[in-house]
Image (cartoon, rainbow, N blue to C red; front, side, top):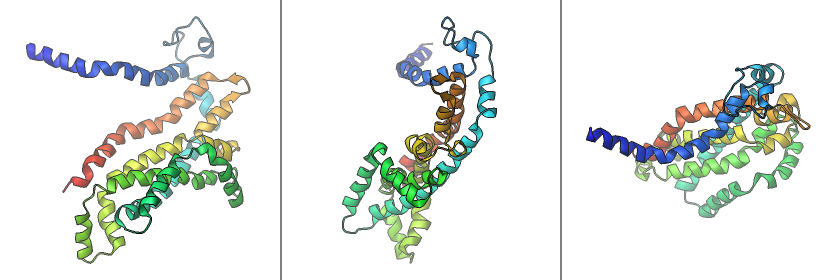
Length: 282
């Protein structure tokens, strides 16, 4: 009995302080989820309980979202752009990170700092020159405009993330491969990349998330309804003047966040554990 009480006290001491932070983090999600299933009458009823559905669950907002807007097209666009931009950025980042970590050339340290400083530049300062580049390439009002511009902030971020992982890989592994007759490029593809998979996958996760949630470029470079990304489409089409379709907006926010939630719930722990232990195994 005493042991059970000690375990309960230990659990309470560990998890009870986290409850306020958990409530703070989950409050917006719970609010959106409840609001998406309320009728319009209940949503605008000031006397209704905001944290409970008292007049029955309705699916009208989800029907409006999926059948009266281009939401499915927006989700498809977001997937296409996020996957392509992430893939392009990772290819560049892997080569850049390996060169900065393993190869010794004049100005390597300065170049590494410059990459990090580039990532710190606010996007709001870059979308005007980026718009000129997009127009010059003839990609205005096209998803390809985002595929071209997203790597400008994904590459610096992914490069620094992968650099941190590559630094934890012992150099002796690569030196042994070089002694056995491998070229530098063979060492990269046959030795370094297989070991660095957890770090690369972690960079993939965060890069995909940045693409999926990006708003400014997606709003600036694309105006056609059929080419919009999910975050922009939901807001642009469901806020008309001073009229806010709150139910459909909440349904869109919940549905558009599900892919990211799925990725984080099922893969983030594995990626993060790989960052700390993947390079030391074997």
